[in-house]
Amino acid sequence: MDVSNILAAHAEKYQNVTVEKETPLEVDPGLLLVTDLNPIEEETYNENLEEHLQSLARDGVQALISSLFSLPTKPSPDGPLAVLPPPVYQLPRAKPLPKPKPPTKWEKFAAAKGIQHKKREKKVWDEEKQEWVNRWGRHGKNREVEEQWIHEVPANADIDYDPRKAARDARKERIAKNEKKHQQNIARSASNPLQKRKEDIDRTLAITRTSTASMGKFDKRLEGEKKLKGVKRKFEPNEVSIEKEKQSSLALLSKMESDKKKMRSDPGAGEADLNVRKAVRFASKGKGGVALGRDVSKGAKGRTGKGKKGARR
Image (cartoon, rainbow, N blue to C red; front, top):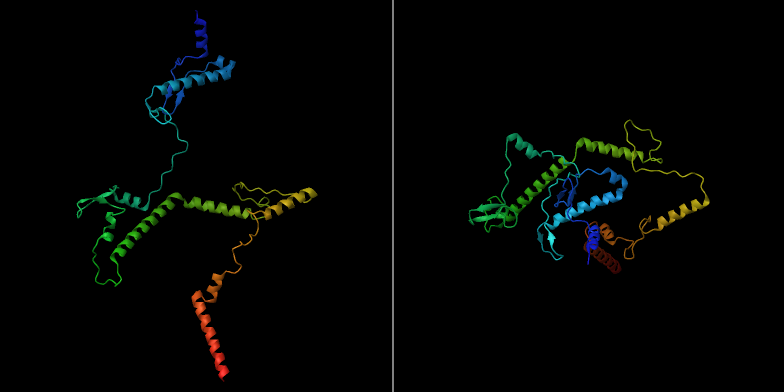
């Protein structure tokens, strides 16, 4: 039985998995990237563009898949996965490089004095315990004074002086001071005084422009002033049809009655019209409800006593 015709038809249907070209394709499995440096065949390109592009895409995908099957694999719940190597092609940055931050006061001082920055270790040696302990954090060296079991009290200290509380307050004060300096450095590096001043002026000018009924359309422009963006003002004609005026009125009424944009919210069911706490505070002059009740009871007793005396008389 001659099956050569069947094999030939099968071979024509399925192309060869080996891609051979004059200039070999550059495959970068790390980025799943294939680069074809071969020149474009002008005749095939002009004759059938879609078929030509599909042929190029097929060759590139076939070369990529062949390279993936030659990589080492690792097991996973979904099946074996190929371990991609580090990428070879360096992709360009999507955004420009960040601008260098201005130096802080300490960095300027250190540069002027020639002080070299030294990274402090997280562990320090404790001579008493004869072991390495944390410099900061829980049971850190910076909390040694707070956690020791005996303290030396100064001779001129107050009666309620607490050495542990004093040491803790001093540590908290140092933390707050450092955080304040950190925030000042961030604000100094993030904002440019001249640029901020210019933005404030532009914002103020935009507010004055939009404060008129025409949204600044008929105002006189300053030299070098930019056109405001996002400010649109549509003027309706004075004479409109009755149907259009009806629609605009109904739209305004529906907007006023909506839950999200109603002009005045109704008080809740549980809310009272009188703020009792504020009324008690005002009547007692800030003393509270207990003091107000005591004063009321004293006043009632006084009035009762005067009435009795008058009755005896």
